Length: 137
Image (cartoon, rainbow, N blue to C red):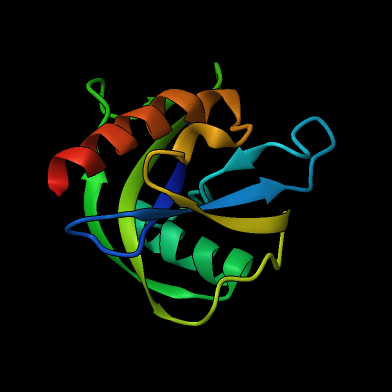
């Protein structure tokens, strides 16, 4: 099982109202679907190190990580071969730009986080995050 990491980049860790979504441009079978930014954990990296690297490469930003969005089984199942761990995050430096693997970014308002065509594995995660964000306020 391969581990990937994702960031739920929000405007406020304590009371998030906006979530950053990224639209895939590659590979062709995923193009046009939305996801949380992030990527695969490489050998020798911690999940958090991988997430910081991926956000720098994909979006040109640095973030402060908050709490992990925990799945009851430990990681969010994406496919038969991929599991994902996700952390809440806020921007520290940079303005997010679609530098790699994405052609568009969008800030979604709380209450409409499910309004884009998410990758299938992200759908239950986004629903859980929106429920958590409602509880935080």
